[in-house]
Length: 209
Ligand code: PRP
Image (cartoon, rainbow, N blue to C red; front, top):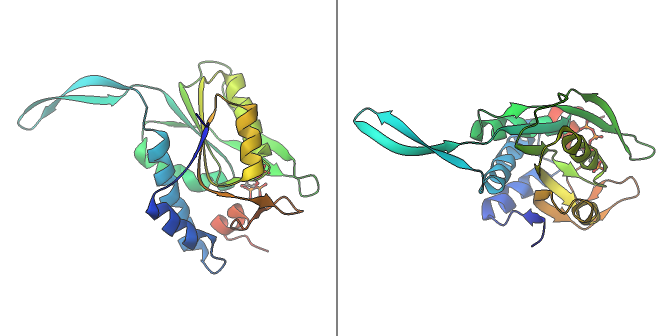
């Protein structure tokens, strides 16, 4: 079985088209990221574990089920912040652990500038959030941090991935599952995804030069 999946839902295709459009303004761009993150989160949580619980309703007792795993949401700053709210809406009891990384403009290698993962007691499931998987370097660092923390079940949610970056990550980490909105064929000489959507962080936070 492949360790990655691409969203197949027609709503994903529709919202990706708006997201990619260079004319889409920041407010709408953020909304599109939000919608796509919701679709990714629904897909990637289909096998989360549940535990039975009795719930008193206004008219009786329902035998219900609730999530039973400790879940950590791990956004990669900055752009990963755009996916946090929709994922938390679906997993309101999840923890959020931030990892700060930026890509060096010369080397395209990730530079870590913030990490406060505790030394012990890891979550059961770690969801790494980053809208872009270009070379895969930033997500590779994040996976390494979660593995070091001791998370056994690591899942990645990314809106657009480059095919080479995705394949390399999947080969390197066959135990990590990756959900993406779309897979684009190539990276350009600046290691930007083509056709992609530009710089997700700048478009989310309206900091385009
Ligand atoms: C972008 C993007 C990813 C990373 C992807 O971040 O949001 O984190 O690059 O590239 P990679 O797969 O080659 O590592 P950027 O460095 O622009 O920082 P930002 O999120 O603060 O804008």
